[in-house]
Amino acid sequence: MSTASGKPAGKPDGRSAAQSAVQSAVPSPVTPIGQGRVHVIGDDAEALAVAAALAAEFAPGAALRDRERRLPVAELRQLRQSGLWGITVPREYGGAGVSYATLAKVFALLSAADGSIGQIPQNHYFILEIIRHEGSEAQKRFFFERVLAGDHFGNALVEPEVRKPEDRKVSLSRDGEGYRVDVRKYYSTGALFADWVPVAVADAEKHHFLAIYPRNAEGLRIVDDWASFGQRTTASGTVIVDNAYLKPEWLVPHTINADHVKPVGPAGQIMHAAIDTGIARAAFEATIAFIRRRNPKQDDDAVWEEDQLSIRDIGDLAVALHGTEALLERAGHAIDRAYATNLADDWTRAAVAVSEARAASTHSSLLITNKLFELAGTRSTAPEHGLDRLWRDARTHTLHDPVRWRLFDVGNYYVNDKVPLRRPKWAEQQQKAKAMPEGPEPVTGDLPEPRLAAGL
Image (cartoon, rainbow, N blue to C red; front, side, top):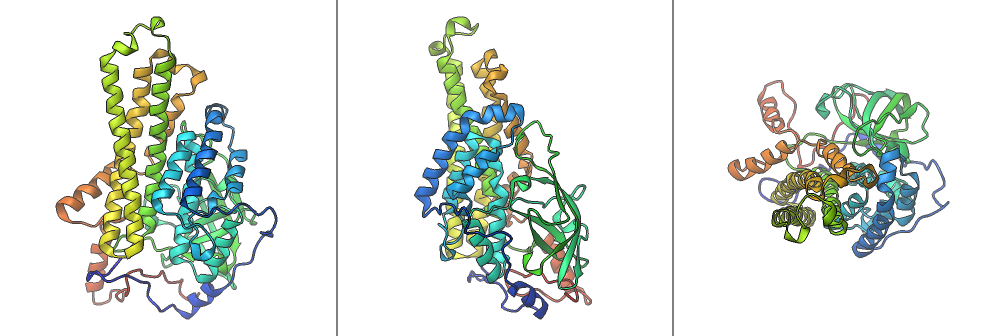
């Protein structure tokens, strides 16, 4: 990122005394990390090889897990042992620091095998990104070490009946040297399996944080009440935090509004695009495989080799899939370029590229998972094939982030040169507030730090 002049951006140097005290605290382990230490992946090539090997193991059981709603506990244990949880940990902290182009491919591979397993790690890497940019040095060292030892993050970010993060209810209060959190969350993908559960919280002054709880914290309860028709084994249920005590070192600032593109935005969104791309790839391959092995004489339609319309449709699906995969790779490289330059223009281009990939992946995953049945015929609907899982997973996941907003972001950028922001009206509101005589003081720097609540 950069300022308007194009200079590299940076965080403000100053922190309040209270914030410095909280952020300099060193987290203490909840379990000895030396026990059962996992493999540490060394580079991008190894990450892709490990992901491909795991995907090959996960794919055969995906339909059964979906049909009987068997949670992928053993599969997530394999993920842990493989070292994949730590591939985005920066090299200076002992990780592989893989590129985002590589991370997107990892997600596509896992999601092609099982759309639920592909979804579960998304919040883990998203939380790591927040810690990377907004955590203190002590928090980075602690949590990165834990992740390299095999720990992973779930999430508890979304509140019922709260449409925008800035409208979150007050849930954080001070209690002595620490804090208390009282809130209920849903869509908590991965929390049931996680070692740490990051809870999005707001204080009385509407400053936002992640309260990162150990999975076994007193007052933290996870309810497995996820009942969607798709991605059935993500355990995206409810998290209840009942006045639970939080150590100060486990509170991480989380800036949710900004007048520029923040790295966590494109980083989080490209993983969602990769999930849908992987599901689209799985559906395309299933279509081809099913058609090739069927007996044309037992079908009412024409012999496959002579069915020119079906062949034409397969070509259409191939173009959609390969276009989506190319856009996904392009978006990954755009994020990597923005990290290398840290210029605002490059972060804007990265956000637009990710929005394009997000829109394309939504289109291709829904197109291909639906067209599968038309091309494969009536027998493809038999329960033993489990092919409906692909459509249900795609339909469920693509609702996560309405594609109409991604298309709006792309069009608004090319027509009006507008930067795609999470909250498009926020910058205008800030400018109006700054112009008011009694308004808040201007925020300095390109990455404004959230302040602690008064008196903390």
